Length: 151
Image (cartoon, rainbow, N blue to C red; front, side):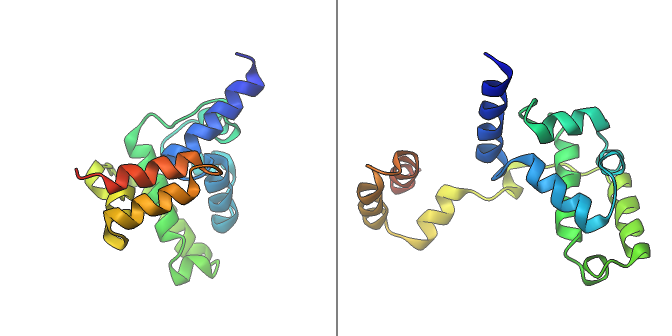
């Protein structure tokens, strides 16, 4: 597989696993925290080259769950008023806190898209929506059909 196809495949996997390409998520943090990519990598506990590979799609995933959990922690903390206002001391404190954290991500902490769909629609509604979307959006249609089925 040539490099361009590998990158496209990896970016598609990132959308599936993380909701969007990791490069987009990381760039938002770099801008919001006014740090370099290397500084962010240090905070996350990953090497700068590895972070670069994930961002560019040369690598599909972050293999260490603690690194991913720190990324999520930063994404949440960047929304605090002090950090979002650009307060350098608040940003430095958040970076230090996250760098020192030893978080984990368990399946229970991640949203379950099927459960969320089931919470807002009946199985009949999900099947009807799936039927409407089959021709243009087959993957989305399949997800709706899966949500319509009992666990």
